Image (cartoon, rainbow, N blue to C red; front, side):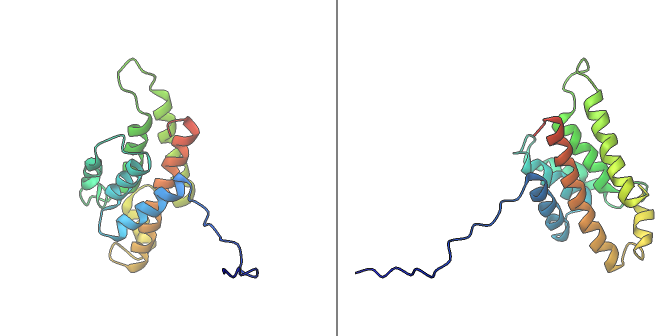
Length: 161
């Protein structure tokens, strides 16, 4: 004879993450695992998008560490975010319309500037105590996640995902 527990709560299911949330979590985790910001964003977006590019696509972001090889001229996460948008919605031939990817990159930059008010790695890092400061590392982890999330949101808005 089986006894049924009537006071037992119903099984709870965890809400699934949106693609943007998943991209954010993955990019932040990859950055924390030692991938550079540009690598983390490209790797996460490519995975969430179902690998439209070979899995090694993240390697394209390797030189963006600390803004183009340490120059700190632009944030690598932002630069890779533009690349990820191109991967998802860029044109395949020169006769394709250029505007969708162009405007998507502008939207990404607008979101970035609204939050950061600076596009250079140097300016962002300086606000958090410099490149080696733990607060800067935490902020950049969050930035990687935010950029990956924004890329996915923009791509979804354009129907690319």
